[in-house]
Image (cartoon, rainbow, N blue to C red; front, side, top):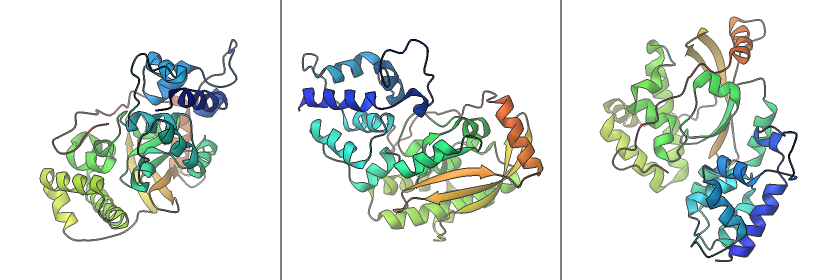
Length: 295
């Protein structure tokens, strides 16, 4: 493992990112051109001491970053595909196949669009409905996404295993959302082929949810591109919105955003939402069940 080259690469990537690009304040006493070490560590879910050792490129403390750690750093530093692969090369880790890379790394085109949707609830999700990145309005509208990664962070998984996941949607709409989620997952499974991640996820869902198993056996397939949703907000009540999906070229990621016709009650509620902010909407993350790892 080329630790010195790995550390140098991380430093140069950190220096090029401005705090505002990742939602951090510039601050009056910033002495570095880009992000501080502790800020990168925070974005990647690592300890500041561990990340510092990585940048120093020292083998004294036996620093051996895992594939999950490298993927988290790639997201935090907004590496493109070539840069992410280079990071894995330097760490002497196998480069993730395309199915894993799609889940670990936000595609730059979608990330660029998300950055421009500051007045619209929006998030980038995988084809398994795992949130990769979201803006503040999306968190205010839908609640904070799980901090961990993997199949158990998928909203589809939680929809069929955790009753709390459905609390933001009127009960009369639940059957519709269940059908849409399963049909969309069928399309993702076909697109991925013999993929271990989705195969394991479907197997666990079939065991844990009779509703999912019955819908899966219908073999209905439909990629979700647009939907009309009613979302139950604890302060603003029921908000009716149109939900749009912009898929990446390979279909492994999508930009999802919510909007309403100008002058409608939904548009007025979205404006109010931007004012009142978050009302402690964090979802319970829970623990991973048998058969599905948390990351």
